Length: 454
Ligand SMILES: Nc1ncnc2c1ncn2[C@@H]1O[C@H](COP(=O)(O)OP(=O)(O)OP(=O)(O)O)[C@@H](O)[C@H]1O
Ligand SMILES: [Mg+2]
Image 1 (tube, rainbow, N blue to C red):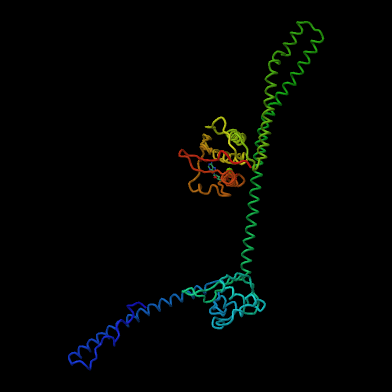
Image 2 (tube, protein in one colour):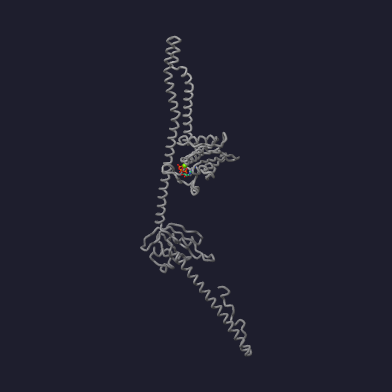
């Protein structure tokens, strides 16, 4: 009660004794008494109003608690310090078929089967010693059946922090198990889909790689093949000419034959034919070596290697089978040695270049710009294309798994997700994306110059 609500004057406090006063003074005294009574009455009225307001607030709070308790899906039991029930909610009333008044002051044990009574008896002790009870235990329903529940029981204190008893909440385990089972099934389904997608992405990459390799090998091999055919026909003419020479024909006849068989032209041709074939064989060798490097990305192996060479080889791999080759503009030193996992960086570069190439498919003047920057501890690789760029709303989703704008079968949306993980977690670097002010996407891959050898 606020001081304003308390009667501030007492009737006997300062009122002079009327009998010992003359009549005029007695009248004054009575007037004063009446005035004080008025003041006290006004105080009382104020207190009454304040009390009514408090009552209304209390009722509202009570109704609020009631509605919260009755809308709870879990069962709720409030006990006193001895473990006797003080209050239950409507879910427990429904479960047990007994109402609040029937259960009030009953032992907590009445809610549990006999087999669980030893465990329930321990609740008050645990609560007193400040422990939380969290267990699976059976509760009895209206027909006396045991219902497995997940129960927690916690201490309950008054506003001064004194222990009043406990609050027990419980939820049928069937529901939890069902929800858990559903979650598990969804998780399994998601994992299977993810595996399938990764698998199909692998197959698609393998398909692209095989097609690229076949295409790339086809050129030098047909080159060597054509040269060998030419050499085969030259060998026939040589043999004919040499046989004639060995048959001691005249000089005129020999010169005539030499001209007819075009021996001088053959001699001029042999050198470039052999050189060309050797070059073709050399290219086949390089392709096989690069393929081997691609197939075994030296996982977890930190080595010193030339980043510029790796960038060039990645561009080569991605563009060699492209229908439309973009114009390539590079700003890189002759060599740039770093210590890192070459396989991971190769994988990131292939993904970035492949994406750029895809973005350039419909471009009238496709161009790919690659630059490197160096500072004492880091190297930065900047890859920019002249494609359509990335819509603003997609920029934040680009590194999410399965985010793709490509048709089914063309993209899985894993390329950048995997690349981001490799760049940040495996290589201790960063990968960022933005749109260039002149259009086209710009990816920035930063890598430490040196990662410790493992
Ligand atoms: N250089 C780029 N220009 C424009 N959009 C790009 C560029 N790089 C990536 N994107 C966008 O980001 C999306 C996600 O790229 P990401 O590499 O993760 O998957 P994807 O290329 O669609 O499929 P995947 O790489 O798995 O075959 C792409 O679908 C594309 O919309
Ligand atoms: Mg991609």
